[in-house]
Length: 298
Image 1: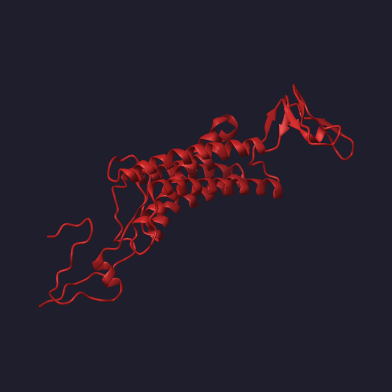
Image 2: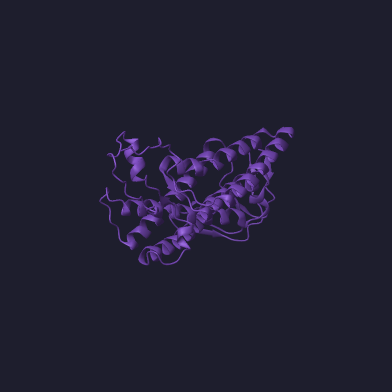
């Protein structure tokens, strides 16, 4: 009786690869656009933007790298949104100055970031919840809470990063805001905790070490970063809360509806036959192997 021949499995052969034509098309168009931008910035001798383009190309490779390394399958919709998010943040936002030209651009990206991070956090908990080897059984409500907290933690860490860049490298990642009213206890004549409100501010004059006075001419008081940070966290909160609610109802009605599944990565199990081959153990002679999940017996 002949033995069943088994092919040596490779890491990518057992992944559940869906129709990725749309993903590949979007990836090709965005990658080509970044390469053209890189060439243009190089000839313009803007080497900082060249580095941003290189960083963007590296970030584009992360979704597929995570799929291979972590044995997960990113839904097409989620993968396309991640690629568009990277392009919108690095190429359009930084190089094309969309952050300056469109005041809503930063808020839109932070809202999307909150939504995507909540989807990733929810997927991690969902995978562990359904994994037999892990004794984790969270209710739908607590799964939504964990996803929300995961997203907010990522948002806070990003704001820490922006603050660090501004403090140590003198960047302006936390964009300043011009306001016409301030309230501060530093102006309390009694040096107490009574806030003094100053309204109608039209300009601020800076006095430098050498006595030089430099009017800012911005039409108000320059708030340094805090308003931008709180707005970013607030819209991140909105995105995280929206997806956490979607994820809650997704688990409550498991199998019903397809909207949430477009954003939740799925864990791909190695088929039993390939698992056996990977361990160097061949199936007994003449013994049929049971069909793996998603396969029909011949």
